[in-house]
Image 1 (cartoon, one colour):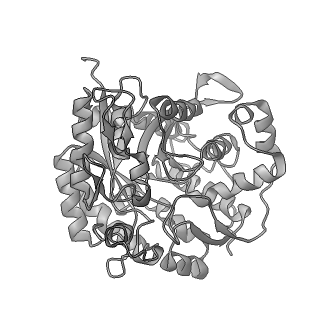
Image 2: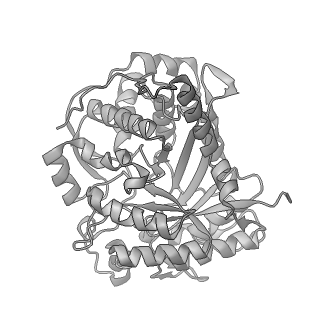
Length: 432
């Protein structure tokens, strides 16, 4: 053990935002190419070939949103997810697979209208050996609708309030309403990328709760994405503490911080701003009632979710690291921040979902693919004295997955004859 900083390399390969149907043409050829996802691979063959190349570069975490290979739009088809997962598990045996859940677009809205809101996150109930994934980002942007309603009832959600006993009272007292509204969240997005259709807080509560239970039943792992801080923190705290949810109840939780996704989680101007969000996410290892007792292992993934139109304003000087004082784009700055010895980051995420472009040394935009973005973050890591972690046993333990394994063994010993564990009463889903 040398004490050298290591990071797990993660690729967000496709994403939900940059599709032909989500972007309104601007007349800027380059911006339009980027925002319609011109360089995003959609066919299973192309995606798998790229994933194998990334695996060879050290990538061990693969985050994927299903896209229709014909239309390039977001899809709720679990068959598409399975077409990626099954061969990926065979070809890249040590790759951790994550499915996205913050899905929208015309084909997603059509599926939800026909089958209900569960369609948005039905991939969370796929067993791993049948083409499922190790992780699913349960806390999609639309789930934050619950916290919007909490704010209307109880006032603004400050960090001090979320960390207080008063928030536990909110968890106990708040009953999500069944009022259907058209949901569009305050995010930096393409023209239609923030439109999540018509839903209600109660529907979102039930979908979120049932998705957590599905992961528990499958013995798989818990993951959420933060897109609006501190509202995302409040939503995760609520899900951790709520008796019908118990997010991370098996002892593990991965939190992905998507810096730049919204005005509420802007891309940090300084390393201190970056650390402030990371450190608050780490607090979820403890319950509010027992702040000194570690109840779950929290890991942190970071991504730079910056629109191409905003790339220029984030091409600024680094305030830490070996290249301090040099101008760098958002992705290079993110890699530099994550590579610092005290960053608290476990997975450094790059890819077409977040920044489907590259920025040269002069701050100019260029088209790029996932492999080029991988080279960019590896170069920044290396310059700052960090390395890519590729040891499977180290990654498994670092991501808290041994905590889940121990929890499952405990459950098996409690039920030696294989009686099913039903910790929460089953309730039917409501849908619009």
